[in-house]
Length: 160
Image 1: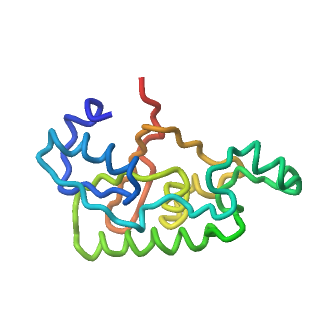
Image 2 (image 1 turned 180 degrees about the vertical axis):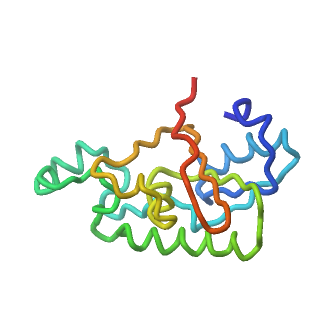
């Protein structure tokens, strides 16, 4: 992952405060001489009763989800967990802080659910598709902002 980003220039690197994201962020940040900034707003969904289960296990215990478009993050509603609106609120707060600080080029190491929320918060067309964008472990998704307009530049790119 860090080799794929070695020629990129970042002013700051942010990361979810979850360990797996922090480890990735440190590996990317080191060659750039940057220290990752952990931010809980970049965490994955809190999956509550679904935590630690595979999708097959979730669906087996909740057959009604088979009838819904369950793979769309905006429909997640795990018992004792977060729904999509709650994740979007966290991500919106993070984005607002970045904009207020006029950060420039930043890298955020985060999770698939958080990325779905980001696309929605930035109102990117990809967030409104019937079949959502699939994010993969260690994939790179680039979002570009210019004067308050956002677009998906590319991604998610899958590691070689």
